[in-house]
Amino acid sequence: MNDDDGSLEGVVAARTVLSEVDGEAGRLVIRGHELDEIAQRWRYEDVVALLFEGFFDTLPPQDGLRAAIGRARREAFERLQPNDDAVLRRMPPIEAVRALMARLPDGDDLPTALRLLAAPAVYTAAVMRWRLGVQALPPDESLPHAADMLRMLHGRAPTPVQAAALDTYLVTVCDHGLNASTFAARVVASTGAGLASAVLAGISALKGPLHGGAPGPVLDALDAIGTAANARAWLEEAVAGGQRLMGFGHRIYRVRDPRADALKGALRKLGAEGSVNAARFELAEAAEQAALAILREKKPGRALETNVEFYTALLLEALGFGRESFTCVFAAGRVGGWLAHAREQVKKGRLIRPQSVYVGPAPRKTEGEAALAH
Ligand code: CMC
Image (cartoon, rainbow, N blue to C red; front, top):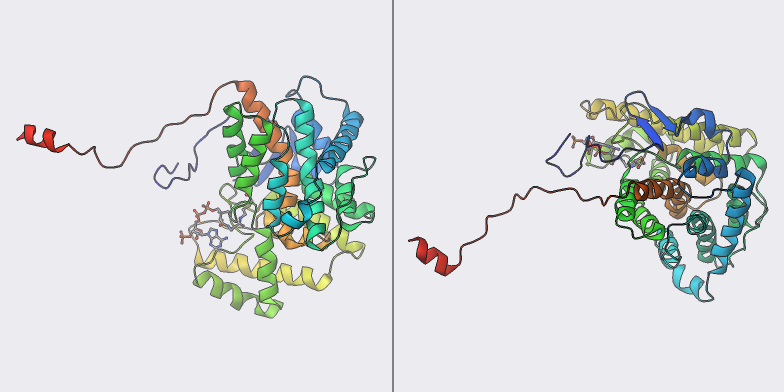
């Protein structure tokens, strides 16, 4: 525990049934399931059913839940207003999505939760299309969530491998212990503010480059590196200049982030059907190896390994998401975890209200008191 630097590192602030992050073993368990077991096979709706179980009075069976999420996408889309494109296309996408999410009604019931769950996928696709000067596309309720998100973005149905790759991503990032955005969501939920408020807190925390904003800069770095031969020199200079290498290091993992391998697996499948630029993948692998070697040499006191964001960047790029939208896609996956954590916190029925230790100056004596003291 480090109680001086404000990080709360090592402090246990919640008990949860939702996920376990084992930083020493590089293991992630989502409610009794190893990530490896579910990442390549489950749809996002399936992991939502797992996370939501027991946190709402009535949860439909899995097929019913898929249909309800489809209807919730339509409802979220119907809330878009005629002038939204003109205003929101100028904002950073995560801020535009947050602005649209802020219009959704607050509450603690399942319909509220499903609307919040479905909306980031709908609004991300809409905002990214507006930025290209084209109209947002309404959802197709009959499609699975990930497939429909890609269809709403590109205007055509994805291949099964592309839809499965996005499912792998959304499942992989759905929950991850008491990360900063989940903690923020739990704090807000504990006040009784409602699920929409909790999700907005989550989005606001996720936006930062130290949390969900890293994958865009991963691609910026790869572009700047340009060739495998240049990787070592570029990365060495960046570290020497005090920069953090995006996509490396983690507060909890002291070994490789297991989510990186889940995503790399999905990327390989996309590569096999020709949806990944092979040269880009080779450059990324060379840059990863160079970065790990440099971090071992320059930061020997801290085990810095590849984190989830490195292969997120390549996967989302291969699926045709613009890099400015990566944090929004992260939100589309993590929202399931925020909602489940918010409900878990509400069910505990206690306000989160820790204490601080005052280290400021003692109160000054007034002139009168000072005179009396003499
Ligand atoms: N590149 C270079 N140096 C690093 C990096 C990095 N990516 N990460 C940590 N360090 C250094 C840091 O500068 C410090 O060095 P020194 O002791 O010489 O000052 C040392 O390692 C320890 O760092 P720390 O600040 O104690 O590490 P932390 O636990 O606070 O940071 C982190 C965790 C994720 C914020 C950090 O590793 C980082 O900034 N990484 C890059 C951004 C990134 O990839 N973020 C996505 C995280 S994964 C998504 C999620 O789960 O939220």
